[in-house]
Length: 116
Length: 114
Image 1 (cartoon, rainbow over the protein chains, first blue to last red):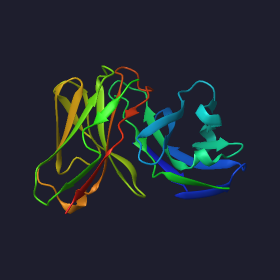
Image 2 (tube, each protein chain N blue to C red; image 1 turned 30 degrees about the horizontal axis):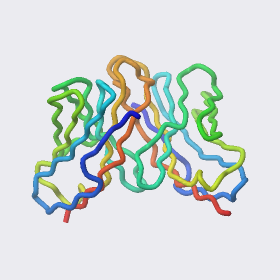
Image 3 (cartoon, helix red, strand yellow; image 1 turned 180 degrees about the vertical axis):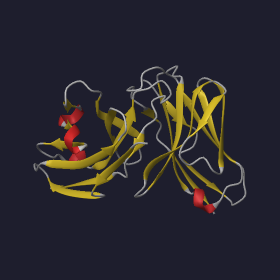
Image 4 (cartoon, each protein chain N blue to C red; image 1 turned 45 degrees about the vertical axis):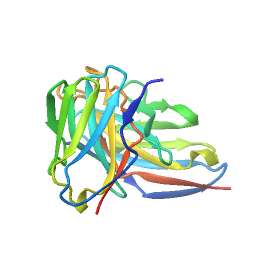
């Protein structure tokens, strides 16, 4: 079985400050890991994904995440927050294997608020 | 532009009604999914389909069924709606054979059961 835990349901930062959203996973097989973002009244969009290539993954809008197997973590960061980054962020895990069909298990979500 | 379209943005139904939520994708994807989204719980998988007429239960299938008669369309059915099924429902699709393939999501249907 696989699971994802996002630490902190709400994170608040000032514009220009570092963004750090935490995600820890549990998986019995090598995982694929994802970060999705959901802007108000929209569906989810893929920010970035880890698929066992480079451990530091760069995504859209200046976000990146680092896969750390020893810590079972996949934290999302952005050096400088913009007002437009305010949204809900979801970490998700999948795994290789013919019967997974790309099913994702999602974390609880973290709402990011950016203050002027 | 690729799209996953959900038929209704908002839906209000009464307890005991049969409810149909429709989802259509135009990307020729084999895999389609229904999730429900609740505050503090994230997204939970209800059902998914990996081919026409094929379906498998997700993590919370109780009280739901699905239908996939055509490749592009995946319907979620609430046989007898209950108040605890009030939620945001999200449909998604992905390409077959690539477990790392991204999911494309619809904008969601906010269902209220009174």
